Length: 165
Image (tube, rainbow, N blue to C red):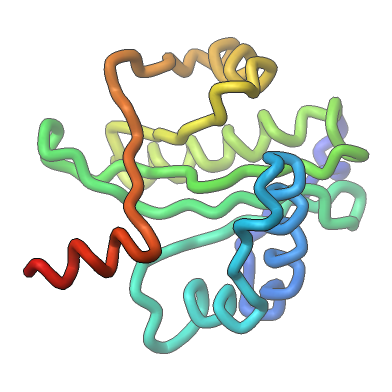
């Protein structure tokens, strides 16, 4: 791919609507569209607002000037390494832009950020049914972590647990 075909740039506040479009497209791909609660306003406030709660960052991949991909990431922390790592929350390439190496370049860009920031780890999760993604990640040298299970508490169970504090 010629270098000029793909430009990766930091997401800016003006990209809030575009980021929401990508989030909705990702949710549709993951068969989870009914779970999207994000709005343009919440995306803007969370990523770029004065009172944002997390150091969330985003990048946009533009293929020949058109928005083709996005990634949202943040720092996590490993007690074992004693350092912050980079955690990829979401990466999505629009279907019509796949097979151009965009996903790989987006991951390489994020890996470069992790190395520049002295992060010992760069981590993410993938849905268990997305074998093509898992196979792709393994070609990059990523390893699937066995023996770990992800947990989430939200909605009413979250509120109920909070009331016990």
